Image (cartoon, rainbow, N blue to C red; front, side, top):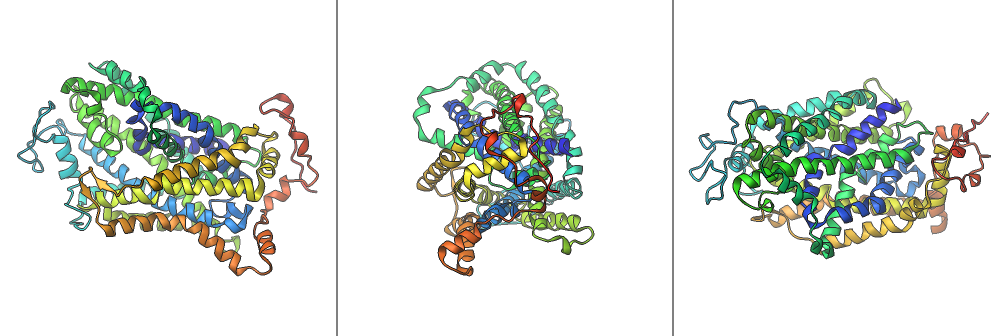
Length: 561
């Protein structure tokens, strides 16, 4: 089971290429990698380790894991809201990718010509600069999205896209319904095959004209941008997003670990695989973008886009310019689909695990898990129907910009650090980790939990808040006021879970404020703690041990007789 669990976690940490990785790549020109690497060690790895260790120690999902300090159980409900929203809108990237994958099986790619029913008279097939519109843009906006003029014009449902969405949800359901063990067997394929495709695309990319210029654009920093605050803010936000911090999925995955699994080592390995995959993917993407810039005779900054624009406009445009274009298009989109499915598996798994943890064993019924997964997938699919309409892109952007945004994740991460470090106690939790893995992690992990990471989270959060800009589409369409209200309701629906739950619990308790606080912050231990946490274990003796050395391989778990 442990190997299966590790495989699921690896696939999850590597599978944000579809939405998160492309955001990093487009910013690399601004010496992005320097603050990015710095935030890996100041926030990414400490928070990643905290969530996995917490799940492993408490043996619970994103809600019951906060029995470590029941007063702050609102953190669990907040993460459930965030991951539900993320599951709802993230799968649209997979639906679009699946649609492009199907359309790749044509002798001529449909987005490479202007003789299609959805093309306008302004369409120009040449890829040189002109006043007309590229066929790939018209395919994306007129065929795939069939986009309307605004959020207030939902229009009709794109039945082809709806069928793709339905197919992806069916795949997710049958991969998740039996639990992490069956999911782990599937991601052995979905997590490794994309690496094969990446290598194939890289070999092809570096052989194209202009690939060298694209790669140099990727790796050569612009030092003048290092002084810009936005670069540092983007780096910190990207770390929390790509590591899936604050979603509760990592705690759910950690709960499946053996109690004495070395989650400290796992956190470093998985974090480095995550960032390493993103960095490696950059060479693939920018070699292709360099080729496209060379063919168009423009600077690469003109063709390097971020977000869905890279996956569904820039890259399809590039592959349409290659010999045997359908082959390269199919390879790219099957990779995009498989990577995205991994993230979707884990998001649904995290949500369902948290829901099932709310029902005690006495309420267990047959096929409980299968029913819970079906309800989750069906509910998300119903909401997703609003995103396959003509106004669907506007709805998608609302969810992306507000519901699982940098602000909500940073708010969540800040409070999780505060609760573990200052309510439960950083030293106390380090002792608990020592009981599990046999040695104490390096002290800087505790310092990050207590001081550095909360400050980083709150600093970036305040920057986002103070520099808030209304949401737009393509920097042209401005969302109406009621659209902004809906967006903020999505964001606050998770953020308010924490203070509202705290006030509600304190108000409903009895005694003085101090008595209420002490009673409500007292941990509620699970049955497994009685087995592994012998009361006479000498944790202080572990403080002098260094991680990874032979003398650390001591048995500190004694069963209670």
